[in-house]
Amino acid sequence: MHQPAAAGFTDVKDTDYFNTPVDWAKASGVTAGTSATTFSPAKTVSRAQMVTFLWAAAGSPEGFPAHGFSDVPAGAYYEEVLNWASPRITAGTAPGVFSPNDVVTRAQMAMFLWRC
Image 1 (tube, rainbow, N blue to C red):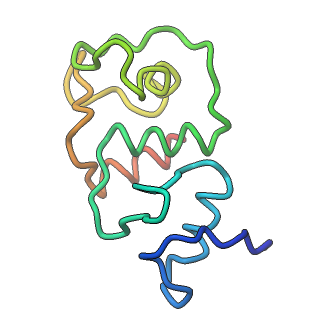
Image 2: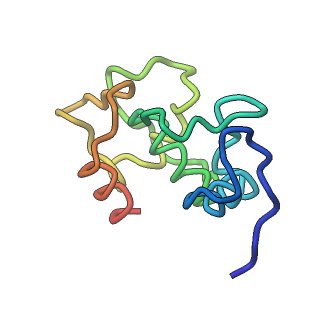
């Protein structure tokens, strides 16, 4: 596999087991990190962030019908993402509810990846 360019995050060492995937994620546009110089590898991931990573990895497709989640504010950075993700990747946590700020559980992550 091709070695991506180093991401340059100060909190990701060359010896970290996740170094190459983080480099790939930045080079592929999946994430820009939590700042220009940090990735924050120990920080939790929200449901909104998780589907945004998947959407970016899929090429940021657009043109899908409105998602219908009542707890997603108009203009949220993940609004178009949920148009793509709903209902293919996620149906939410309850009818009409996505819970964007909840921490994504390992089970939810596995389901998102499997459906993606």
